[in-house]
Image 1 (cartoon, helix red, strand yellow):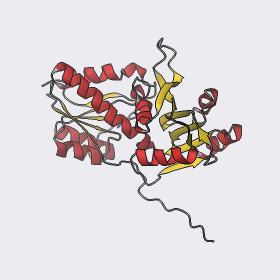
Image 2: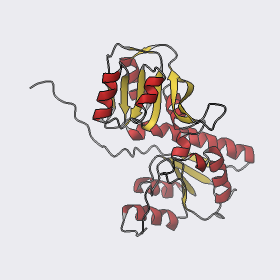
Image 3: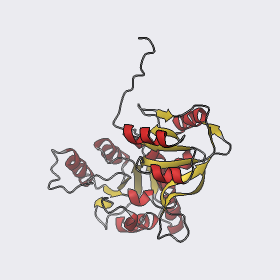
Length: 278
């Protein structure tokens, strides 16, 4: 059985921390480097419900996509939300490791997992990493379906392929518009409209689209937009990440048991469609 430092070294090889944005907070939050690791849980958010799930599962390590502490703090007191998570994990000897924007930019990364969940063929990164001579690393992906889809068909595929959330999937554009190329970016992606237009994509799937950037993007071009829940666009990475660690474990003879949380941690819990009657 490997110890935590062995597993962390493997995770850092998969998603090198130096690929993370400068503002990000990736890496190990808590855990004894010499503690043995036999069971690993992957999840999107390090919230209390996920910490409790890790304890119930008997996990030795929790790997999340989102950081617990994205900004500096002066306390981990248990009467604070984040402090309670830390206390829960440490009390039950569960380590916490974060792979965030370093996982976004890796190959395969978060957007590769999103594309795979939608049965799309990845052509290239949307925003290539200039330091990568092979042109495989970077943010987002430019993809194509196996055949052209209408925007309505694509919207249904996204809704059926990603975890169900209260938000569902919103689309902007002509429902009959054909989509031959699609840009995808797991997580918040409305800062990449210039790059999406530059690659000539017919549609763009991401999360957290705000009114003004979306409106301006629609005015600039006939680009169709699909807006899914942030959690939903990043959850496929958990399955991909678990499979990557499984491969490492098999190669090294570790015998790790990996699990993926099915708990929906999207913060929105209800949705009411407007009535057509006035």
